[in-house]
Length: 429
Image (tube, rainbow, N blue to C red; front, side):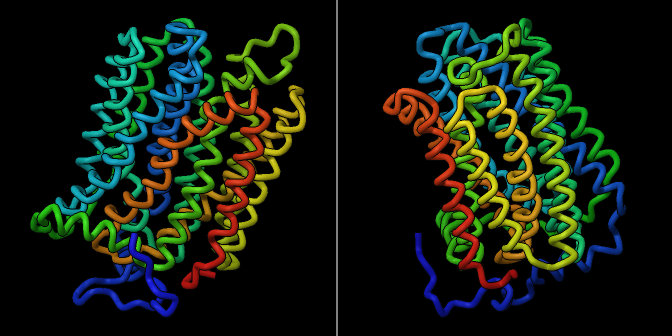
């Protein structure tokens, strides 16, 4: 990766290419056409459905399905499946974003990805070996990242700069709401995961139909195809932007720490936590998620609003990442159920605020407006890419460290590094 010199201008100071509006200019120009709160509500629904599938499938149903096939090797097998599927997520997200940029539309990609979730989930439900589960979940990640790349780009496309915090809060609330819905439905269908998979696919498809039916988009000018070499150069060029690069690094570090733990939550509850008598691990997940989600929802709304009011994105991003690190230390020192409850609440506060405000920060450091979906797709590599590494790191740390406590410590260190990564950003306060 090419590194820009310290004297390079930040994204806010760098001139846009000739004839290209800046990101803020693009959004503000479209502000008069926004459907107001209706768009925010639809963004909430669309992201809630997406995260419900991610949490309910990967966090509950998939873990149970893998354990049923080979209980003794569940950690290694789950890490293998999660790692390979995340490769598909990493590839399809920016590629789908670039294709939607080229087409000049987002809605068809949202609808296509959402509808394709149904057959992908049906296939996953009928997989009965580790290899077939891996293939099916790779396809599921591919279609879901087509959906995600397009719906993520709606904020820089249609929301003015002054309202980015509120819009990012609406997007961010999809995580706690979706996590709660996913955990509850995952626990409810733990004995019938095929039906559960189909239901999650239908939820995403329904959200895609609702979003595209209720929003109008002004088609942007279609763009001519670019040679592959030029496309790869464009991807690398976005990371040469000083502020965008540091935003990417910070997001990648925090997400790596987050998924190293959260992906194994069911197994942590089975093998690390001293649960109260009569409480099953699946039921514990269904209890932890609402607690985490309430904390996350509060932090998302308050963090997004305060970051708009005081125009201080970096302060909130860094502080919330440090709070996530504090949360991860709690279960490292105690295997009690109370420690997991405290971890879930504090981590919800930290991660909720981080995702809301960091999303707003990222939209402010995009290199160019006309490549918003591509660049947001590149940033989403910081979400999907660490998921490739996280399962392998987690399984290695758990095996070498003889337990899950060292995993919490490693994840906390990554969160601290993520907090420090926002300091070099110059174009946003």
